[in-house]
Length: 228
Image 1 (cartoon, rainbow, N blue to C red):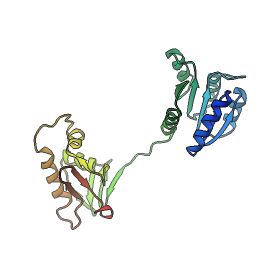
Image 2: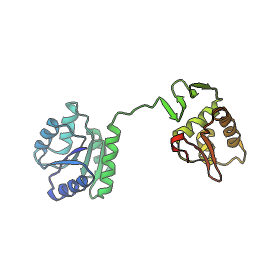
Image 3: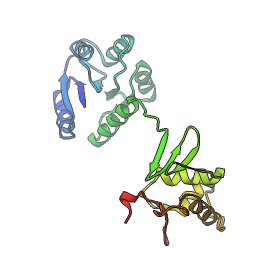
Image 4: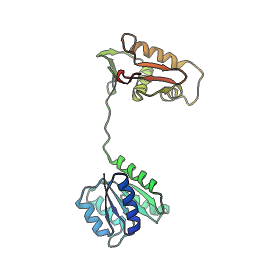
């Protein structure tokens, strides 16, 4: 990841640069606003960190010019100006986040990582696989070894939850919350009943059993290659 810091306080810039480099970022620095703008427009960066108060051209003017030219690079604004109106002004100018001085480097890093993640295109998942068990999320179709598995609506939601957490124990409480929207324990065996029905449909006719009960903990759906 390549980051440009536009900050006229050399000590602050060096501190940020050192921390980012230790976190495996490639970092460049510019202390002048106009030169920072020119560098931002002539190079491809994964993110910009821009101070508000800069010589030649202030930080908000830099951001407005970049956005006006169609640059969508994530931008984190740094400033000692931290009241609500000033933060709103920075975000309206086109900043993706606004961090008030003084700050901890750990927070700066977390905010930087967050705006970079938000800018990355999401990759929609259309299929889930666990061994030879497969869900087509668009068609809501379940197959195992190419054979169609017919599930009731709650069984389908239950299986999807287990497959999205494949290889991990999913507790009864988690299933009550995600599948039945219960935020309390209804003191029924509804989970056990549906697990039993689901197991009979996806495991009964196959030598390799995927759905297992972890006594005292919950349930786990394991692909054969991660089976204990």
